[in-house]
Image 1 (cartoon, helix red, strand yellow):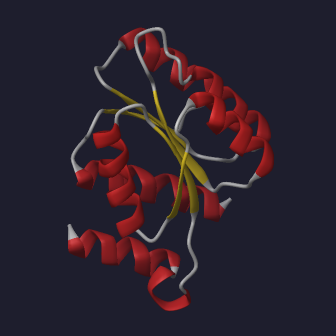
Image 2 (cartoon, rainbow, N blue to C red):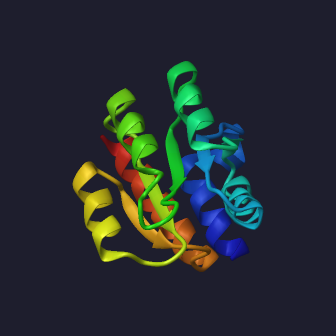
Length: 142
């Protein structure tokens, strides 16, 4: 994992310039917050944690983010509003949706709305890093 982090940091200049991507993290479970925060922080991101979907919406109004990681919530897809609002504020922002359990309807809806990726809760760190790397690389190339 350490080599993967170094490769991502080198690609985006974190190791040399000290610049950071600002990432909004909105997940419901405290252990998920620690998990995703740890991965994103290790990649050199400045991680801003929203404690609720309502707080995430307010943060999106006030601040600029390079990407967002949003919890799906239940099969009712409570994270939908954050996904929609994030893309309204910045259509180029990669938004990763993380789900406690994979739900094909939520997956299809998230991807139709414009999510960059849909990952199962606590996917392997390597999978999360690959997704983050790929989508930020596409964003910076655009």
